[in-house]
Image (cartoon, rainbow, N blue to C red; front, side, top):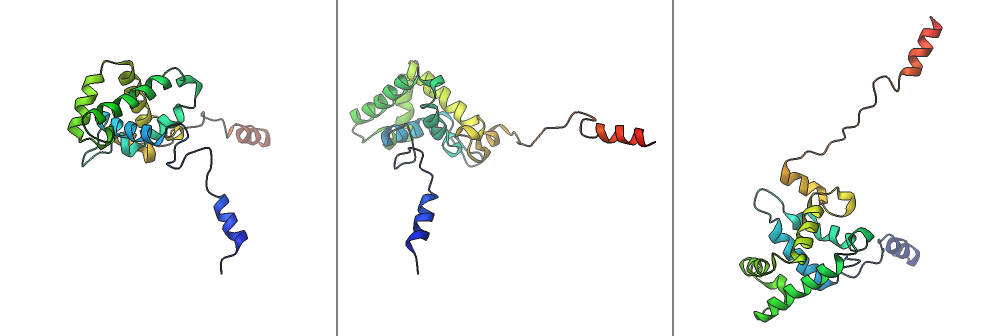
Length: 173
């Protein structure tokens, strides 16, 4: 028998930090779809390696949109994503993400010298390879692409932790 307090406790475990139904805080569902398709063309996956989509670059971008450091490029990227969708609609499709890979690349070539393309490509690359604490590089996918094996590398300074033991040993002698 399920009890209401138990259900309330389980429901409260759901993380709710202002995200919309699609799991994004700053990107609209349409922007997220367009950015995900864009990212998949910038760093595509293949049979052997993950790409920007598997690395969750769009989640990094969603978080970046809320940071002051990226505030200047947010309007540029939003306008560019809307433009990608408008170009797809001009071809008779619902949106940019609905296009075939070849048609997506053709549209991207039309805008590759724009401030949008430069900003969006930079966000995709950073989101793919940055530390996963920032929202991208899910399960180290970006590091897998470049063959980086993430391992802790901290080594204490020689003698730091045993200095007091050595001093105690000398005083006992």
